Image (cartoon, rainbow, N blue to C red):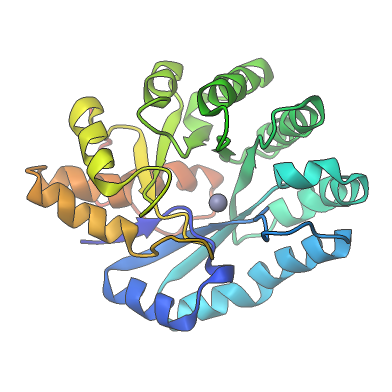
Length: 274
Ligand SMILES: [Zn+2]
């Protein structure tokens, strides 16, 4: 099966991960910028050099493993609270978003759901709309349902086209409101937190797979860069049609990110699932 990994932080993974991902059928990936390093960055330049690292080096590691590389950029919600970082990243963001390897704005979202976070969410949504880029929306770990509802409202307030927005890290608690909103739904398959593969299979049995995609969101916490290929196998074992799984792990993310105009990848099926 041909696999598109739409959300993985390769910055925190090693070369062996790339080799194993390639062996498992992952042919393309998207690395969302705005990654939380696990501690407070102190200097704006650290954020911008991280962006430069993705564009200047990380894609070469992917390409050596036979994996096509794209990335996204945004201000991390936790770093919205550091004025010097917030101002520098927001000022430089349009330049990074204009790069040919960038296929979306993201991850944009909430951490503690306060007014300053909302202000930068709205500013970044406006920027994506102006630049005609899809948006990856990060839903928070705490107050997940309230945070998801607020982000959906933010997207509607800005007048985002539902085709251009993916609400990520959905769970059983939030999938219904995302489906009702008309935006794309993303599911992060994690071994310990977020959504287990078994729970994801149940969600897809109930809701189908239209306008949905799955990711590993692997970083340097407990996570698995092979979550997507493993879930594909589990779905086949659970009785899903091969074509339905193939659309979920390739066509859906390809159709979403191709809206940036910067993807060479093509869907395998002529039409999106009805
Ligand atoms: Zn992430």
